[in-house]
Length: 173
Image (cartoon, rainbow, N blue to C red; front, side):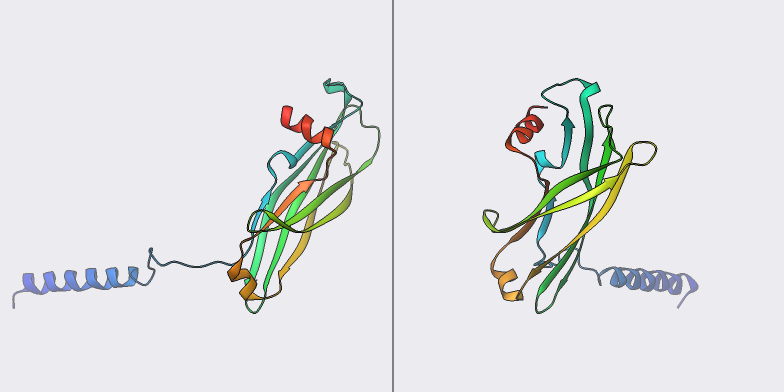
């Protein structure tokens, strides 16, 4: 065999080895995940509290926001989900307090429409010198059996706890 032929076989062998290494991760492999979907409800993840019925910037007490949602989920005999998120508040010109209490709730839905649970929480945030405050919150969710998780689609929704008028104001803005 000539040196040229040996070189070609060597290059071919390296190419096959490289391609076989890529084949270990099948891009078409389907992974079934039974962890619940987690989201912030559309018009209820940010809210600006305004003094009275005014729409003037000088009457803003604070703006609260749910953000940075992270989930950890383990699927064994049970499906355990840990949801972490930030509640951030920015003080407005009408705010004279050093702190504010923000209410939020967590919904668990089954198959996107059946309400399984609703839990309401409160968190008190103290403003720093720049008028900002933020706290990381964590909630735990458990689907008791993996069979339930296989049978139904679960969803966890986070939202600020608003009155009907506050929801309408949020939708209109």
